[in-house]
Length: 150
Image 1 (cartoon, rainbow, N blue to C red):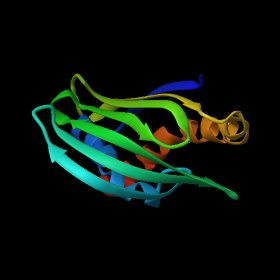
Image 2: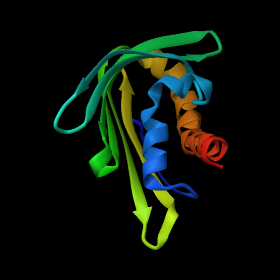
Image 3: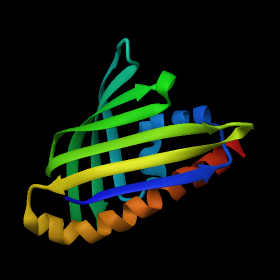
Image 4: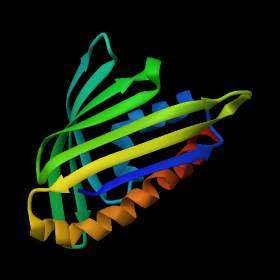
């Protein structure tokens, strides 16, 4: 089962980075492999906001759609993505945003993903591409933050 985790210091606050990652509707503009994203439901809970979103990922001639439940927890600086439907056996994705003491305009982004495709053929075709894309995710979000926040 492929897993990937990264920790990256950025020159933006934890709350700025949380807001940027929470803006899932903008993902097709800058996230590697994300062709489209549609939020089909939104609910406020005691934990925070819960979204149900459909994302289409594409690479060359391969395109797959999957549905996730996204829980936004601003009080914890955490975003949890839970897999609901699509080409995976499972998918868990977690973002945390850690303030850095003494540096109001800096934070550490922790990105974690654990996934497994249902199909061995799809895993063979997309596995290496996904791994490369996940390595680029943190930098894609940092570059987006630089453009938005300066």
